[in-house]
Length: 313
Image 1 (cartoon, rainbow, N blue to C red):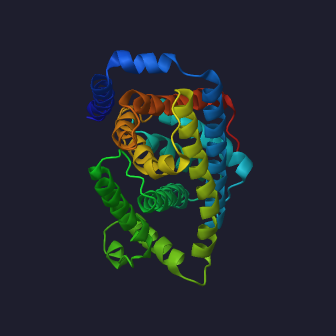
Image 2 (cartoon, rainbow, N blue to C red):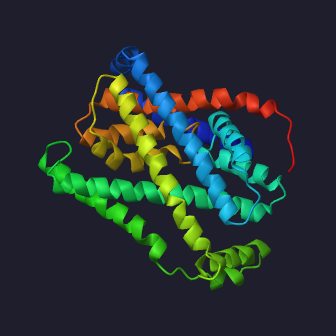
């Protein structure tokens, strides 16, 4: 059954990537990729590496806020190995996140709290991404940037901004957690305890986690800059504000547990979203592909870290 699920994910990712090639036109897409400026691509790769180093630093900060043993020097290689896992195993970021949770627990930390640190890390990045995309989409709307230039473009931008606004306010909704305690699972009770600890002002946990948002903002600015550099390597200039406004669906789709390393979902989102900004389908898909290739290169560079002996604290 697990092999069937694995095969289905791989097949789904391949099908989506084939759909992108069919929609864009394989010849046009390959011709665009053949014109890639290696200097701009090197810039994109360098920025992407910097983005992931800062991401690892954010995870280490969040883990320490949860009172876990999490030296930054140890967590950066863990994060790098997770990138290799994301590249090799279907399931996008899920496989890497599981590896991060396990490796952090091997430092003597409880597995549930280790998993919570990864979950908070992911949420911090996703929420900050949506906030920045919301602000940039609102700025584009206020400035009269109607994306594709058509009348419908403004309406799409308005609907997109509304969806992002809903995501932005979600952390401020008082979600009930007492029902977790009634579930017949010990882990559910521990999750409820963690949630109460998060919302208890006496612990200061929420205040410490909020401080991690500065790192999340830097991560998203670097990630969007890498996308801009990928587009520039194909000879297209996309305004940074538009790229940051479009970043949320591109990155979220790439993180879906479908396919391998986000290929297929990321390119489909890039064609749909950047197309509204007037970017041609071949350049939009090529931008997504080059960004994915940056992730693959990083995964390959991090692969030798699996050969290092495991050390406990």
